[in-house]
Length: 181
Image (cartoon, rainbow, N blue to C red; front, side):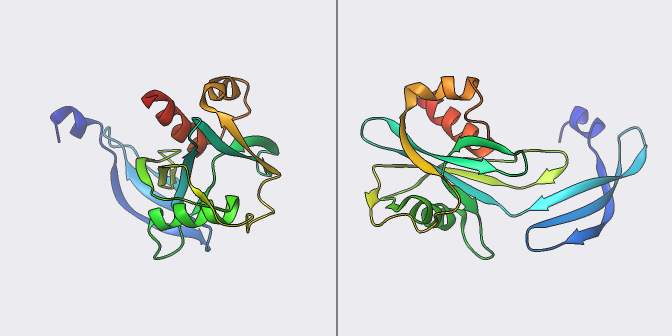
């Protein structure tokens, strides 16, 4: 660690759980700023998530039209979900694709892992890429999305600009793929 990094590092002196269930853990953490100021800071810990960019041979991405009740908003998203206890994110990605789309990936490539809201929320997100998955059945999960569409990658920037794509995992995955095109 450099001297400049050490001068801006926050020190943790412990913490306590305020609320904990299978979906979220809320803690108060005793932190000290580099200037010596000390206070309790909220931290929300969530399960890790895995999302997948699915591309076909025509350079189209499979998107799901979903309503998110927290924001009371509709948007296009990549398939994905929460990593179950003891499950590897790669396994989650494969499982979620099949449940939500009825497609099975031939292979999955890890693109990036990220934290969507550093500073207050701990929720690692893992983004994968698959190309030309095979059809195995109708989607098993029918309550999460109202429809699916293959969308040309060239249409994605305008969909982001117009607010039709707005969720963090979807944005990160699609922007990563667009940067490599």
